[in-house]
Length: 391
Image (tube, rainbow, N blue to C red; front, side):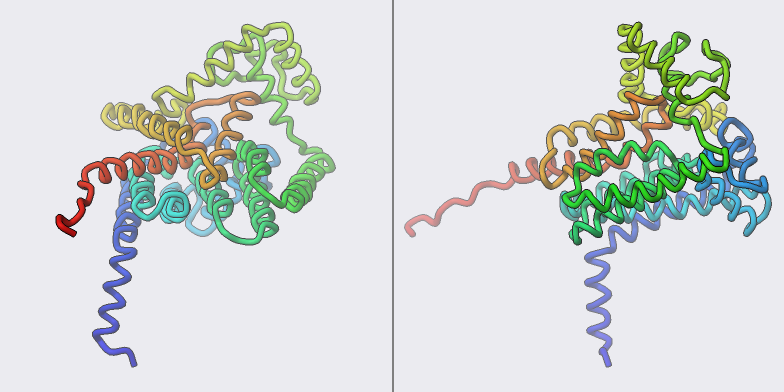
């Protein structure tokens, strides 16, 4: 039997190695659970939130939006009661707290333990990762899938296994939050064994698209989004309703939307540049999703300002780290991140809420950048060793 001394030594060694991370996780979990219990529920009846809840309460799951998140809501409501938003908050808060552990695991592979603890602490307290736990939207689960993808891409395992798992994560993520597919091209570039990644994606996404075509539920989501981005009515970066555009209808074939958008790009080059500029402006500006979070924040100016400015330090340090520390060690994080940004900004609407999917990567790269700066400061403060006189 293990004696008391050995057991105590084992516990001490565990806390020495994992105590800081355990404390960060408990803070993250406690903060999220507390807020989920005190936050109101009335804001869930607006915009996309109302749509997801209506689908979840209906007899069938939709093709567009995909069924992943409505199914999550449906199961939650079946287990805990109809429109039990607080149960959704609690489950999403637990998922969000678990991502803190994944932040640590991913970052420790790229930058060591101290940097990983910094990334985990930032993720635990970052307002944007907390506020979306308290809303019936896909952001929390979307962030979880982004971290799972990073976890697989940075893991030392067989290349075939890495390819298959990456494809499964992105396909499952697509069925919850379609914009995650913009990580796909960058992920493909990072994989040495690309065949299985492509094959698994074709099987799953192909089967899903075929199902939509056979049942008549096929989605024009991409075509309509592309058209809403590039059309004569578009100004700035705000999302338009189709009724406010020249075509003015939602039931046209995908080819009609794509043809109209491409015609606009060809004949309105400078307006196209302006549209892309405004989307890039969203990438580097303060703000949050006014159409969703504002319904919860309401008149709380302090909370509103925290959410307005919370992104800026993450953006500044994150892009500094992305530029400075791009190498073989970090390319598996950087290239999918750049892929998402490039294709999302080029092909789709890009709002403050949509940039949330890059913020896990920015926090990791920001932590790597700060960790490198601290290491250099620390090394500069250590005096050089001098030789022994008379040796």
